[in-house]
Image (cartoon, rainbow, N blue to C red; front, side):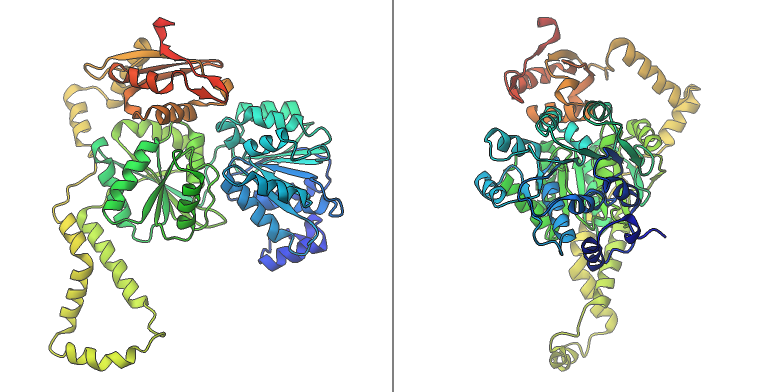
Length: 558
């Protein structure tokens, strides 16, 4: 068995690791630490989130740096404030017996003056988000001339968020770096290009299969009608009373709407989306970490970099378009050796997309029945009974009240007491679910159709796909689409899912008004329902993206 002692770490770090209770390195730590301790080797580490990557680069950095020199020698760049603070928190634990080594976090949404003062006090490791770091560079408030080691953590997420130019600018401004260490969950072409341009024959480590999901996660899905999606979500939450999780939506409008509806119905939930100020975001995340909130509902962009321990469930209110996004979503649960569940709510037309994701993540997906109303009430009832039996009565002078309780219930049977307790706890559930309908989509209609027509459903789907390819869209009866041009493309750091999220967030439209999206390097074409086209143009045309004016118009009017 490989131990931390066998990886070449020094005594102070081993004492800190022992104090944390770690006994055996994770696979990424076992493979990366000996390579990184050489100090001169570039490295690409591919591993899913929650596999111990911070220790894999944090421990070697602490051993390689000179604590006597009070200027930045190592730079860790990551996509979000949350991840930035998490990395600093973990590195602080690792350097427990290295008091003269200092780490500073710099990120947007906090006082830049305070961060500049922290840097001036003397620091060896800077952990930064790209935007704030560039701001500090331009203010000449940080000197990267003596940086020896640059770590790009969650590199794929940084590129997905449009930070490619920022990353290249940062790498160009660290001319004396001896090594670049890149950690990522996936390896898209953009990361491969960055590694070729800025790294010298990097040592590559891959933990698990590319795009493969965490094997500790159970992937489940429920099939329902599109208009029953919210009712299905509510029933899933009610059927899992101990659930602590994140619900993912495509748009910020959906996130806010669902959060408001569930809050009105008594659930402890809040939304995380791009319209929140940093102060509001911190408040929501603080309440979620403290488990004051049972549920967090978020868009993919807003949830970047969230790392909260103990999440039991991830719920896909809608499937993402890209398998990489699904992997990032599901990776919020099942961390640090724990098990987790990733649930997806789909309608029958999305089964093909789900099977494609299943093949890509190389993990079986299990179809489950949406619980009936009686199932929900039964599950809640037994959960209440378990809580009742587990209640701690060791603290408090309950014995004082026992004679009074005995007298009060002298003529009431044990069975009646239990019934009354159940009534107090479950009246709301019983009333809500007493006539609950079956939300499952059954296969009988499809089977009958195939027998009656002699034509297979899958064959029919292929014909629809053929017509879609021929016409550039699939019309549903009297649908009418326009094609819009926009001067944004893959060169702007977008991939299909992040571009879709961007245009929907900007316009506050729903995905079902869109047809095909054709992305090129410099620009894209979007098919949209004619009735929604002007709203999208009005919301996006003339706005700025990364200092560039966005131009959007009808494709035939350019």
